[in-house]
Amino acid sequence: MLQLQYQNKLLEAGTDEAGRGCLSGPVVAAAVILPNDFSHPLLNDSKQLTEKQRALLRPVIEQQALAWAVGFVSPKKIDKINILQASILAMHKSIDKLKTTPEFIIVDGNKFNPYKKIPHQTIVKGDAKFMSIAAASVLAKTYRDDYMEKIDKEFPHYNWKKNKGYPTKEHRNGIREFGVTKYHRKTFRLLPEELKLF
Image 1 (spheres, helix red, strand yellow):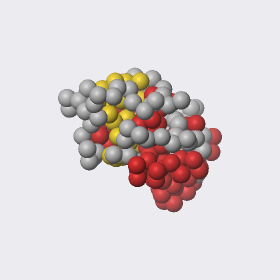
Image 2 (cartoon, helix red, strand yellow):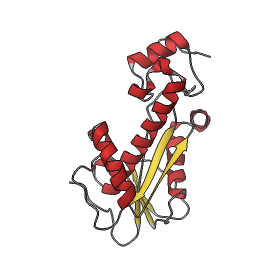
Image 3 (cartoon, rainbow, N blue to C red):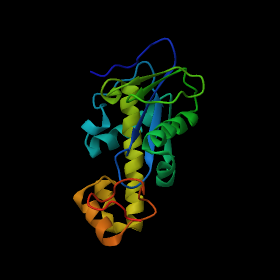
Image 4 (cartoon, rainbow, N blue to C red):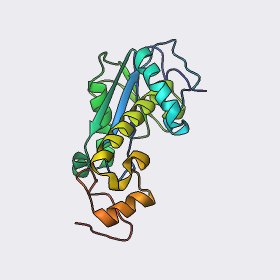
């Protein structure tokens, strides 16, 4: 059972990211502030949900949340600052865009950089424990998937519409055959057998 909040005195936002382990595309994070009476039978960690369930949940979250926002960090920036810092930056960007400023932030995972002076708590597997983090995971995942499907039209050789940039055999075969694109993360080990592609 997911809990609604980590603490109940302050206005709380949950944040999570998607796309950390991908070879291409941005890392995307979302931040969500849910009302105190929110509940939905489907809501769970986005990795436990089907694509169809996530698509059903997204409009519910967007309509019922007190505030929600999504932040993107590009592959270029990921290469520059590393994936951990880029994931945290994406979370900060999503919190920046919330129309209501939270008084407390709960974060999926065990790493976070303080955001302004707002107290926060990192929670390992938070997306399977707290509703606002689970809701953020659904938004981050669906917005990222939409983006990967869009850039798939530009570079169809990698089948991003299906693998979303994750290191599948098919994606790696595409890199082997067609090389890398502007959407690939150059600091990632894109092919296991080659130490350097550039």
